[in-house]
Length: 302
Length: 268
Ligand SMILES: Nc1ncnc2c1ncn2[C@@H]1O[C@H](COP(=O)(O)OP(=O)(O)OP(=O)(O)O)[C@@H](O)[C@H]1O
Ligand SMILES: [Mg+2]
Image (cartoon, rainbow over all chains, first blue to last red; front, side, top):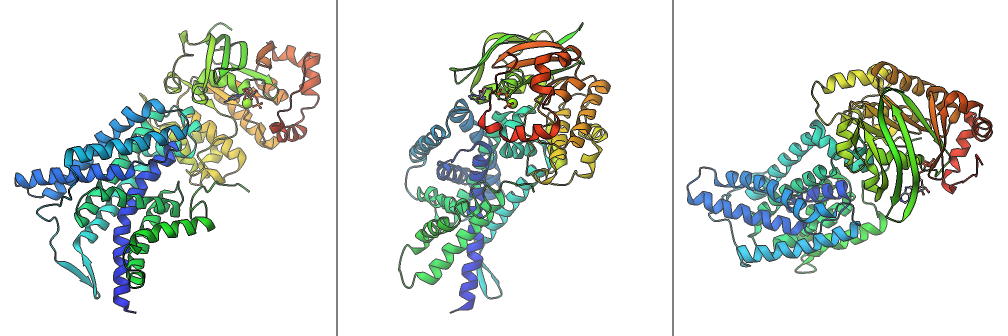
């Protein structure tokens, strides 16, 4: 077996997996804070990605010096507004309703958002034009890394660090962690559940937008980006539904799994292995570890 | 009892619109006073506290009759967040720390709302002044510290909201006698030095009657008796049900069968 190729698959897997991990983080956050499985996460990535593409095209049109960075920042800002509005319009009035009801609402959101995307941006594949990253590749020890992978990885890590600092050092972040741990206790000291839910949706929208954008830059942008980001499901299942580090590690693991299975199994089962492997793995994994690697660790005092 | 900080006027409380739990409860708490609320399992003590703090609404419960006034303002329709902002904090039963945060982070969460003339640093200082043990444990994960330290953590956390009234739900539950003693001393100090009013729910009547000069006794969603602790201590029914069997050792086993919702007819 070609060792360099194997390393190549690994490195690329980690980098693309970091994007899944980023999206998974947003997903887990909503789950942790409000107990809701947000099935519309794929659509959030779509909206974010299309928005970024539109802004990018516009900035290129007016000769803005760093159109992609500018577009990304503006998209993040728009995500704040969109996340806030989504929570306020669709979910706020449902606080206290059975969780299943809310999950069904996220399914509804999924269709609404998908319809909106089709309506505004049509269903043809769009690409970031001119290309965001040059086709030059980096070579490290014989391993070839495309720029888009490297920058995806960088963006994912930067956002993780920002969110880590936010959770660790700001009172809002602390309030969110507290609510995720014990909602009733958090309410008892006057924390606003509304605030926490909005913040969770805002962050989810931000991670989805950045994730979707990089997937779009890499593959071209169409509805399938939404489906690609559903890979966060195996990722979060792997890490444990309510663990933020678990989401990141799970995302990376899924990325690696995808690349490796593409590399190792494609010769024997041509086509599609890359896309199904994570799900097959998820099912097998669930049989053995139904709570994921880090999920639901209740602290038992001795 | 000149100045009343909280007044509950004959409230009726229902869960899920049908389960009637409180059937006409009236309680008055004097400013800077301590009042105890006693009663067996399922009497409705915690429900009374949740009605005051507004947490009731988050369990699909509601005050359907009567009203609650805090410093002359009606609060029974307000949200938990608004009520907390007015200066009421509930320490819910069961030592509910944020398990994955450190002790100090737990306490800081109590100070999440910035108030005039409040700095987190001063707030922490005040908590550590009353609970020096917490200062030693401040960087430990709250899920792993001892039960007594967890109880101190949740009281300290409540203190960070700068409350005028603390609603304490069974702070002695499941703790060793020495610790109970320590915690109750601190609670008394908080009341004396900081002038914080306290409504204390306890099953351990001996203890509660020692720290609070006045007490209410609840049974089946009703107040069945209220008087000064001195008088209550001499009451034969109270003696019989509570003070007779409530040395702390036997109380502990009593707690353990709580889940069977043991209902004892008493005081009748
Ligand atoms: N969320 C709820 N929904 C429905 N019924 C409830 C709810 N919470 C409490 N109850 C019922 O209300 C009654 C009073 O409960 P409450 O918790 O107020 O009692 P308590 O006096 O605090 O008892 P304990 O000493 O066991 O804590 C009980 O019969 C209980 O089953
Ligand atoms: Mg109770």
